[in-house]
Length: 167
Image 1 (spheres, helix red, strand yellow):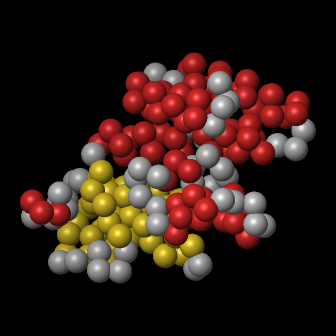
Image 2 (image 1 turned 90 degrees about the vertical axis):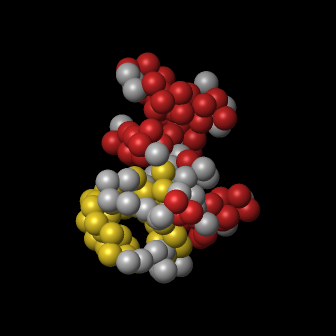
């Protein structure tokens, strides 16, 4: 997309932005473009669960790579653990932060993942200390997946759930 004149107003983006020792991601829509600066309105996401696992030494190399270099293809590894979200309505400098164009379907899947609270459900199903809690979280995940009506989100959630052996 950058080769065709860059990102334009109204398009969707995935931003990787330094947040202390780690990166946070921002998904949103471009409201304005001013040179290398773009005004993004969307959601900022901090992978607090993954950061805690890395600090505790319980995360593998793949998790460390994802938190240090997130992109739209690997960010699901950040989103299967607890996250902190906040509304985002600021300018981002493309010279300092990594701004990646994404299509509307990718945006809707990532946004739906957050809005439907899948990070918390996956975290409970994967990391709860008690077997009964994990089973309850798996059941809640199955029910939530069955109630989804947006096809792309549903397919994505099912694929991730199969990938982490929750189905």
